[in-house]
Each structure stands twice: as C-alpha cells, then as structure tokens.
Length: 238
Image 1 (cartoon, rainbow, N blue to C red):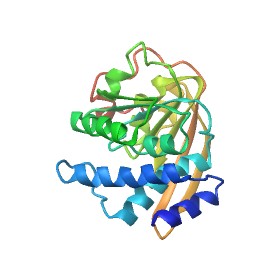
Image 2: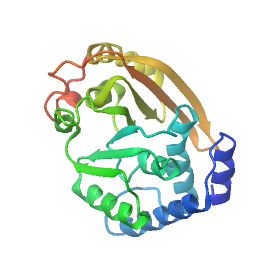
Image 3: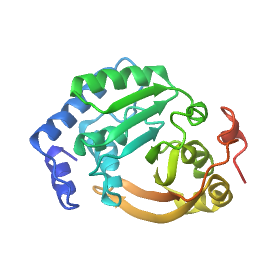
C-alpha cells in the first residue's frame, strides 16, 4: 500500500487525510526506518508494508469508534507508536498517553513526537501493571487501546483498570479473537468489563484477518488488580 492507496482506502471510510497529515505519516516512516537501523523497533520496514500493516491497521480502529473528539486515550504497549500516534496525526484533538516497558522505545517516541511537532502526547517508561496502580492514571482514561500485546485474559487486567467507569477498551487482534473472548470471560467480569461489540474484517491487499474487541468498562476494577508485574501473564484470571 502506497500513500495514495492509503488515502483512498481511508476516504472510503469517511476519513480524509490532508496534505499535512500525509507529510507527517511520510516523515513518521522515515524516522522509524532510520531509528530501526540502530534499535529493533519493528520487523516491518518496507514502505508499502509499513503503510498497510502499521498505518492502515492503526486507522481501522476509527472505522468502528469515534476518535474525532478530545478523548483522553492511553495506549498500552504501543511499541513504535501503533496504533495511537497514527490516530493522533489523523485526529489532532486526541490526548494520547503511551506506556511501554522498554526505555529505548520511549526514547524513540519522544524523538518522533518532536520531529512531527506533536502536542498533547505523553510517554511513560513503566510496566503496565505498575502504571495502572498509579492513582493519577487509574480510572483516568476515556479509552484504553492496545494492539497485539497479549491474550485478552492477560491484556484486560493491564488495561481495564485504566479506563473510567463508562469508558472503553479496544483490543486490536490479528487472529483467534473468538477463542480469546471465551478464555477471558471470567477476567472481564471480575475486572468490570463486558463485551460491547466484536468487529471482524480483512486488511486490503491480502494483508490478513483482523478483529477489534470493543469492551465497555461497566463497573469498578477491584483494587488488587492488576497484580504485581509478571503475574497476569503467568496466572491469568480464569
């Protein structure tokens, strides 16, 4: 997928990329590839692959959720900034927080935000389990989003504590979402979440199957969650 095909594909979903937004995405790609020569940020580095499997894939969340408003959004385990920074470029009113456990990624994200002149962004080097226990972040976000980080039974424990009651959690999945939902049924109930909708679709150009799980924060998460770092992955709620 090249720049023109990305713009055309998004237009079909009512998302219009202006010249400045396209310039920022172009520069995003250039900075990503440059830094990737020095540190391993992504295995996807060919331009057409980045535009399809990083940029377009990030934008698919906006096909099913309204980002065109000043949401307080936190992206858990964003890596090189996906999906939240492409969404920020497209929807500048978003206030984006990213938490990631690797300092090198945070260093990259700070440099990227400066290069792209992004405001309303904040980056934290922290484990998600510890970050979600911080009183200034717990229950503070309208939307929690995460892409390809962990199975839903684990991911929900990292993400739902950050959402406001009545807020939302979007889990972006490559495959196996139905099975993950079954496995996470108890975890969602314990953590104060419930499935609102499941969206299944195909990326264009044979890019593969995707699912987005839209989970509502319907109740308060008990204070004991998330448990200490590493525990959710070793002992998922079941």
